[in-house]
Amino acid sequence: MLFKENNNQVGLKIRPPEQIVNTYAKTMRFYGALGINHGCKPNEDFVFSNSQKYLPILELDLKEMKTKALHLNEEVDKLSIKLAKILSNGDLTLRKYLGYCLNELIRNVLQHSGITKIWCAAQVWPTEKGGKCIEVALMDCGKGIEASLNENYKNMFTKPLRYAIIPGCSSKVTTFSYEGAENSGFGLFMTSEITRESGEFYIFSNKSSINLSGSSITEGKCNLQGTLIGMRLDIDTLSDYTIKISELIDKGNALQSKFEKYVERSRFAPGLEQKEFYEMIESYNNIQ
Image 1 (cartoon, rainbow, N blue to C red):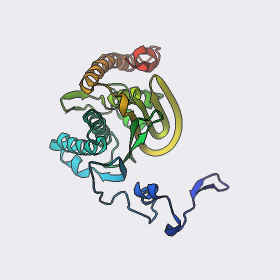
Image 2: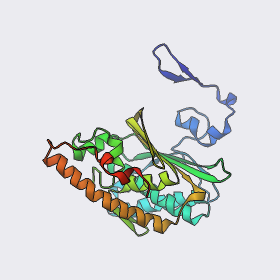
Image 3: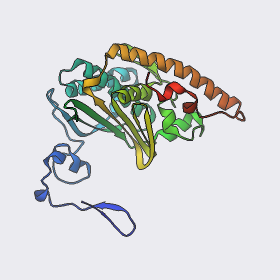
Image 4: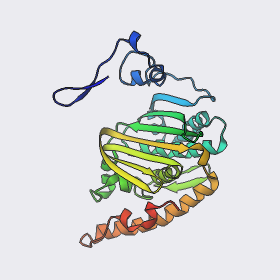
């Protein structure tokens, strides 16, 4: 259980394994993730099944993928499709959405975090209306989003997480295709737009957090070494995959063009007063 010491640090008191009765936490490898010898650890092998409604906390080492630079796209595609097939349980539309989002988030870790290990977990939940939703979270212990963006933008942004989800705002230029949908630097933009329309999207990175749901954006503080990105999708409200991806790519291209002009003005006319980009673009705060 949680408790507070005099210095206000939160600790964890551990019961002996034979007294732990929370089997869900054990199944999800929660105790193993905390270093408690009860159940499996996140880095142990896991037997995947197409009938599963969850992924326990897993630690995946992507080092082999990163060293195979010429085959990076293929390797990430395989992992994304594998996880999507397991979690979609035969739902083709959900599989496509999950595959696309997982593909982009995994690439985001490989290209921007500076490390190759990633933690992930997922769960299908019932909704209040009697439907189903799926929640997926990925975490790395890398440099964090602010440090990554500063490699290219040199302290240009006061709120890095707001810019991290703008198309084209990236510390690296990347181009890839997942099932024919090509984009460059669109990773977090595409995923955040998909999930906020049918659920919510959240990021925790070093000392900042952001949550997007519909047209609502909530910012906060946190204390995390690295980055955690999560998405919650309402399965019953997902729209046609092909149409949605096409719409978002068009929207992303339009926003990217405006963002590039904004960055150019900021770099070459630093004395020119202008609002933050996300305040200037009305469509950014509204799902079209």
